[in-house]
Length: 118
Length: 117
Image (cartoon, each protein chain N blue to C red):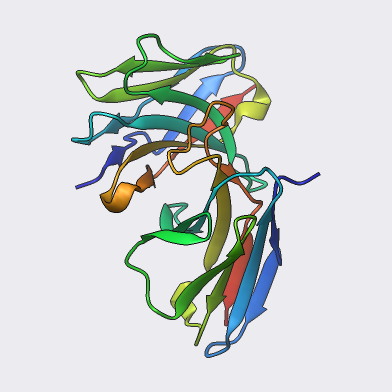
């Protein structure tokens, strides 16, 4: 059973399109995250939700909109895609917002979605 | 200013030797957490080890240990008896308090480790 699953794994799309990436975790964790990893492997947090409540919203263009229908799901919708949006997007979850609950293994990451905007 | 600094973009080690990957951090939060992650070429992020700021002893997990020097704000990862499968990018990360009761995990830029046979 995959703990944190993201779909799709690969996404190639044209500039100006709107796309969504879905994430689901079956760990019973309370907190979920979206990270962007650029071509130099730098990982930057974008958003975090705790029990469906937005708790971290870093400086991200408002073309990016997260949605959490329940605590097991966190989706990322991107409008008007630009070339600079090309990156690997990782979803992650943690037992609580501290990432260090009693049975925690820190932040559990999905396998990533490689987004290529052409 | 960077919150997490990994000064070694690349490291090489002979199989079966030990290697230390450096990480320094900057925070004014008295209660913070430090993590190490491994990212092999396949791309997944694998949690290795965690150290809390109040933990008295250095964390260990199998061949991984974290050399925590609080006064120097360093949290180096030591991998003993390197294996070929240890070749990967290694990221140091810190979780510190943010406004509104949230906690922000911040990652360093990573160190690429290559293990030679």
